[in-house]
Amino acid sequence: MSPRVENTNVLAFQELSAPTELKRSLPRTGRIEELVATTRAEIRDVLRGVDRRRLVVVVGPCSIHNRQVALEYAERLAQLRTAHADSLIILMRTYFEKPRTTVGWKGLLNDPLLDGTCDIALGLRTAREILLEINRIGIPCASEALDPVTPQYVGDLLSWASIGARTTESQTHREMASGLSTPIGFKNGTDGSIEAAINALVTAGQPHSFLGINADGHPSVVKTAGNPDRHVVLRGGSRPNYYREDVEAATRRVRSVAPELLRAVMVDSSHGNSSKDFRRQGIVCRDVVEQFVGGQDAILGLLVESNLREGRQDWLPGAALEHGVSITDACIGWEETAALLRHLADRVRTVRRAA
Image (cartoon, rainbow, N blue to C red):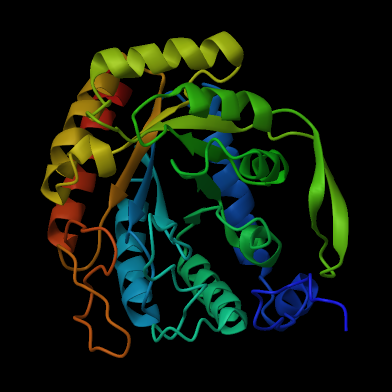
């Protein structure tokens, strides 16, 4: 017998339904399609400076691990989105995939039962169900694009996406971003350098050909036109990089390679910018909004990690979890979130009144 040379470390292959099959069983409505298209267009107008008076705010749980919590959060957020629509374009963080430094829970899409069984077929269905419900509530959704196959299953329900600090340098993710239908933000590297994000912004704006799957789930050569709606996300590194000089430096770099993107600098208030202390997110947001009020109109908006209750909890397979508390990064609680959004909206309105 000849020695085995293929798939020597693979335990099994489990076939998935094609993207078209999942979408057929869980279709989007015309109302949802309108919300997604309108929100993408609104962000596009901010990016190009057509809308100079509003900020984009992507706020919500670090990761979605519980349907009930996600929908309760969305219902509350819907009220604030309506109240502050003149000043803020509010989207909800609906992150279903989590890159890990070593090991750990990789998100609801990978392990929806939180028990290590990794029923990805169920995860895709659950993620799509939750996105449909949140969009029905009237809240546009934002997520990280991590696995190149996932957008075929849920991308039609997203109004914004990001490429994370660990994958901004990846050619695979830059190519994927070039074909996404959403505006896309590239985070700076974990060391704080923005060069990878700038290079990704350039690369994703160009046409590409790469391997992927089509809507019927067949292996395909994917040919893209390039994504015109890109921006950078300052998330800090070895030190915070949300300060005025950091935003100005990022603005110069973006405009040197994509002068049409007039407002293409978003600030992540968590991670390195909060020095990994979730309580500092409010400090970051208040500083950034004062920069905007003070005339720094290159700022696109803010990313905020928030949940029903503040802090975080450890996840262990099968263990009971506290309601509304993150199992990944620590988040600010709802009361602080509502007060922070009100503050941001009030400060942005001063720009509108002065115009």
